[in-house]
Image (cartoon, rainbow, N blue to C red):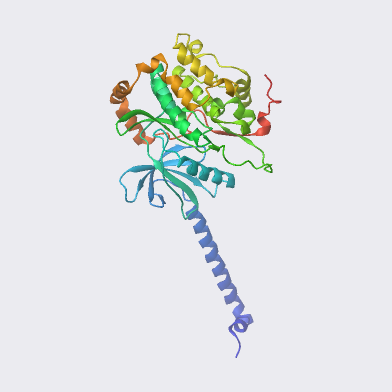
Amino acid sequence: MKSEQQAEARPEDRPKHLLRTLSTALRRAIGEVESDVRKAEPIGMGTKLGPYTLEQKIGQGGMGAVYRARHDRLPRPVAVKLLRTRVAGEESQQLFQQEVLQTSRLTHPSTVQIFDFGIAPNGIYYYAMEYIEGLTLDDLVLDYGPVPPGRVIYIMSQVAHALAEAHEQGLVHRDIKPANILLCDRGGVVDLPKLVDFGLVADLQAPIDPGDSKPRVLLGTPMYMAPEALVESHRIDARTDLYALGAVAYYLLTGQDIFDDPCDVEGLIRLQLHVMPRTPSERLARKLPRDFERIIMSCLAKDPTDRPRDALALREQLLDCLDARTWGMREAENWWAAQGLCVRRRSADGTRMSGTSRDQTTRIPEWQRRTDKIKG
């Protein structure tokens, strides 16, 4: 009795055998295409990631997109930040996980709180954090103009306090800018700033690998980067964040960045390395509080040793300013009573969570920012 294989090998059966083979291959190919199509489906409203259902895209940061979402069993909205691992490289995945782990260690009220972290079956890394109904400091200036000195002090002193906790744990944010600080009304506490997007956080306590030969890149937003972060990234410390915070205070106070934005990154780096910004009062051609102005300019010192020694020292200096008495909870409540509804409506339309302002987080190869290429 001939085997089935031998029977199929007969000349008269070969066409049928070839047809079955082609049919099987075609079904397999169609299945693979359908699988790829399913994987490539755009992420958006209704997409499920673990217990979270995405509802609306509210931001695009340097490390991934941010969506407002709802939990299957909890009534409160959350913000879900995600990274598509099929697109991102290994380094981006590591930075994304680092952002989650490092931010989850922080508990200050002015630091965004992390609730959950997971990897969906389709290979998407995501984490859930508190959803913030508010506006970025970038939006605050764009919509309402320069901010009164007392209010800038009120906001910056809270952010400095949040940074003090991060720095105490050896963490440097590295991307402080107006778009990464949201102002909100949280449980009746108004003018509460929330520091978000720790995607570039550096752990100063992590061991350095002397055998690491990978080329270093510029990480951050050049307009808000301290000189040492531009040319010697291994020298960054807590005072690097204080430089950026000074630049944020300058922007809030004047409605302008510390430098007129040049047409190329190399020109901006040259300014950051060699040129002191004009004082806010010179920029606006009017008098501003001298004590506050001195603090801002000390934060913007090229030499880190000329800046406040740490975030707590900066906070104390801010609260000692005369104008610190001109803005408090009562003034904040009055502002939010007048503008809060507009802010909440804007949030419902899609608040920009982070990294979506005029100043995008940048990655520039080290050779493009060498000091011998950028002369004063």
